[in-house]
Image 1 (tube, one colour):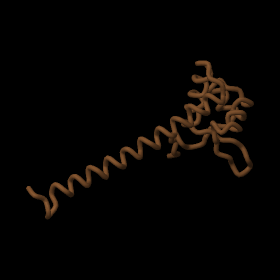
Image 2 (image 1 turned 90 degrees about the vertical axis):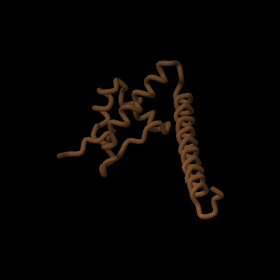
Image 3 (image 1 turned 135 degrees about the vertical axis):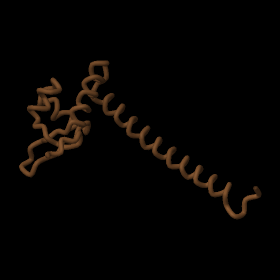
Image 4 (image 1 turned 90 degrees about the horizontal axis):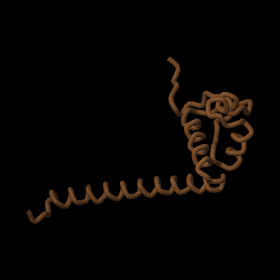
Length: 111
């Protein structure tokens, strides 16, 4: 069976435009601004994944809320930074938890 995962680039620009309601020229603009990065075939044809179609929907929603493309770019940048920071916090919490477990049950514990 063929993998139809959300990250598999299956959709041409014309299909992506039809599904999302965003014309192909705007999809190219989104790519130029770095908001999208569709897969390219060996022949250079753009292919969009389900995840990218969802991202196009997010862009459309933000634009409809009054942001311009620079604002959308900033929102995406802040989301990425937030995700990076959350991963760092999670990593530090795991490290702290691991250290507390080691300290509590270690051979030198006072318990």
